[in-house]
Every structure is written in structure tokens, then in C-alpha cells.
Length: 580
Image 1: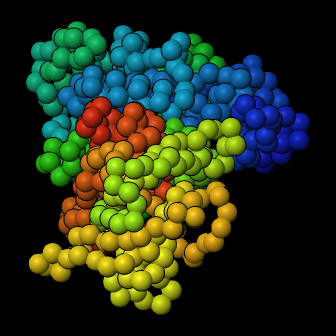
Image 2: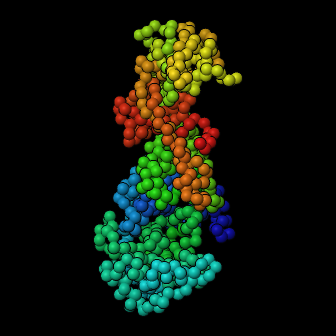
Image 3: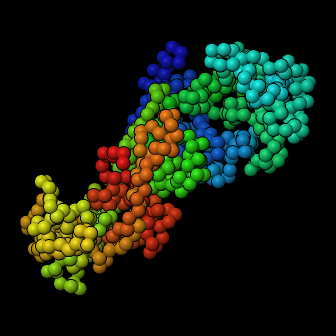
């Protein structure tokens, strides 16, 4: 940033009101270098003080957690500055794109809480204009049709320390280039026979400026334009022109595009100077991408996991796709909170998975309904409780909400507790159930283990206990150190519970040291048959519950049905994950 821009940005910090309303009153907006640039532009009157951003995904896969940062940043900035954000599909490669991906992207952007109804765009809308501009570059001697093979182009491109070599076709006449380009468009040449390149500088230290390709032949039907085109524009060429056509003011992208910015500016400068596009041009601004531990972010690798059956699909709850996170039980609020905490900078970001999980806990703690669920049940027979009798018990729907109501369940002679809450030979400090000891069943009574029954393998099958009728929760009386959750057989419901864990068991499976698939966590999914309290009988997808002492869970969006519930564990209640 120039000293002038930096100074303006500093002034902007004091003169521009940096607050927003989130339903709980005004709060100060976080400061970062992008906001400082926008503030400076607001003060100078550039772009008539408008802020127009865009999120430009290619519909060749599902969005992942890294995209969430960009979505929240672009839509969030537009909202904070009373501007607009465009959702624009970069649909220029029909070989890899699919309507399924496009629809999933729309769904995830809306799920995160952002609207694009009046601001939905497609790069394919500009195919005619992009082709016209390409002809303009040819006519000005700034573009040429190259007939080298892909291998020849690669060999002549040079390296980071050696300049490239001019193509033998670089000096074709404008007339010949126009004719060939027209023939390419009409499908008279095979894929790869020619490409259209800008005539820049093959000796540039920036490899992106060594006569970059801007058009390729693709004999493929496009899902929006059909077979109208046999040539399709490249991303670097399409992106900047699309931004300018839509009057984007601040074009935000991740740092890997920093070296592409000179090309972005070069294309727009030459179209503005000849009146083909209006001034001022959009400003490309780069920020660090989000890298998350214990996962891979490459669309190619995510697709590989799906196609090889290593996961059940793009929305597998172990995948860090937004569809997978949603199905697992992550909330839009938790994703937005995570993106906000990740912040915006130019420094390389490597964020621990625990930070994402913490954002979900923080988002759900005050709002999630509570329930008791026994995931590894062992039977308890309370011998001094009358057979056929029940006792009404209740607990807060959410202990943080005094007006949230109560949930009801029954105490009876036969209940289930977690197997880990019983120890035949207790260690020091174990305050749960053991032979001859007492423990409180949460929201109910104190019970005492009298004896146990085992199977032939030595596993405890039944705990025989007695209860103290004078110790019902909420009635006063004595207390004990331990309290455990439980579910009664008389009104409890059975369900499948899927205990999801991290898909990879190393921090950086994408390090390049061996095949990333060798680091897949063999314990990333465990399915158990659980007993749940009756308040969960009508649980619906996208509803979050805290299973007391077990974590946060949600009904599976695909597999859970009334009478055949399937719950996914989104996250445990505490940090402390260790690889299996």
C-alpha cells in the first residue's frame, strides 16, 4: 500500500463510523487492512462511495470451510458498508462443471445467512462481450493464436530463473489471427490445436505475464449456453472483465492470486483506455487463505475421496465441505463466528481444528436444547422400586434460559446408564457408581449399587441397585459427590448415534509427504445403538441438542426418519482430541 493510501486509511479509521447492528445493538466492527482501504475510498469518493463485492466460485465441486471465510468476508463487508455482494459463477470450463455443484453452492451461501436473489451472475452471461474484447486485443496486436502443442508451450515458458521463449507463431498478422480465432469459435479445429494468448513479455520475472493463454478450444456442451461456443475463456481473463462489467469496487481474493494482479490490471487498463470498459477499474486485494488442520482443502482431493468411496459423498459429515459440516450439526452462526475469529490478514493462516469446534460450542451453549442420552448402555434394575410404577421427573430445556420451559421424562424400575459410569474396582477419585457406593441419577434420585451380573465373557450385563425415595432432585435432603445421566426403559427411545471424528489423524495430511490417503483416521466413524430421553422423539434436522456430558448432536438430514432416528455427533463438550 502506498504511503498516501496508508495515510488516508488511517484518517478513515477516525472519520468513518465503523459499527453495525446485529439484533443485539451496535457493536464495533473489526479493523483490518481491507476495511482501511475501503474507508479510504469512501473518504476520497472513489466509486461514488459505493461498495460492491463478489463471491465467484467455479461450479466444479462443493464449497468447503475455506470458502466460508471468503463468503463471510465479501457478503459481510457489503452489508457493513450498505453495499451489495454478487454471487457470480465462474462457469467457463464445461468439462468440469455441473448443475449439482451450482445448486449446492447457492444452498450453502443461503444457509450461511446471505442473500443474492437480485445479485446472481454468471461469467457465461459475458461470453459475447469477452469474445468481442478478445478480437479487440487481436486487432491491436496484443493477442495472437498460438499453434504450439501443450508440451511445446510448457517447455518454452521458461522457469523462475530463466526467461521464456517467444512462440514461432507470435508474429502472425492480425488478419490471420482473427481468421483462426473465428475458426476456433466455429469448431473447425480440434481441442488443443490452438490457443489464444495475450502478447505481453516472455522475459518477465512474473511467469503469469509470459503471454498468458486467454482462450482454449473445448468441444463440450455448456449447461447454460449449450453448444453455442467451441472456445471458452480462461479464468484470469474472464475474472477481471466480469468484475469491471458488474462494477465491482473491491475484488477480494486469496494470496495465491497476488502474482496474477498485474495481469488483472493490464487487461483492464487496455480496455478502459480505449473506452471498452468504464473507469475506475475494480481493485484486486489479496488476503490469506484459511488452512485448517486435520483436513485437505483441494477440490481435486475432495473429489477423489468421494469418487473412490473413501467417504459417502460430498456431504459426508467427516468432510470439511459446508454440506458435510451442516449435516454433521454445525450451525451457520458457528461458521460465521469461526470466520470472524480467523480474521483477515496477509499472514499465512494455519488454524487448528479445535478452533472450529470451539466456535460451535460457543454458538450452541446458550441456545441448544438439553437431553439425556446413553450411548453405551448398561442395564440397572432398581429392586426396591415398585414394578409398573413410574415417577415424573423434569429438567430445564436449557439451563441458561429461565423462560425456556422444562422437558419431562419418567423414572422407573429399569433404567440405563453409561457403561463408563460404572467401575467394579474403582480407582481413586472415581465418584460414579461402584459396588456398595452411591451416585445421583441426574434430575432424579440417589441409587446404590448392591450387586452385579456378568455374562460368560465377564462383561457386566445388569447392575442391581436400590434407591433412596427421600432424595429426589429439587426436594432438598442429602447429596453425594457423583451425578450421572440415565434413561428409563419405560419411556426412553432407541436410536442410532454416529460418533464422528476427524477424517485424518495427522495435522497436515496435505504436506506432500506420501499419499494423503494413508493418513485417513480408521476411527473417524463409530455407530452405536443408544437410549435417548423421550423429548428427542420429534427432533428434526438442523436442530441442535446437547446430550448431557456427551457433546452436541443433531438428527442426520438424510437418514433420520420419524420412528427411526439417527443422530450425528457434531462435537464433544471439551477440547483435548488426540489421534487414535
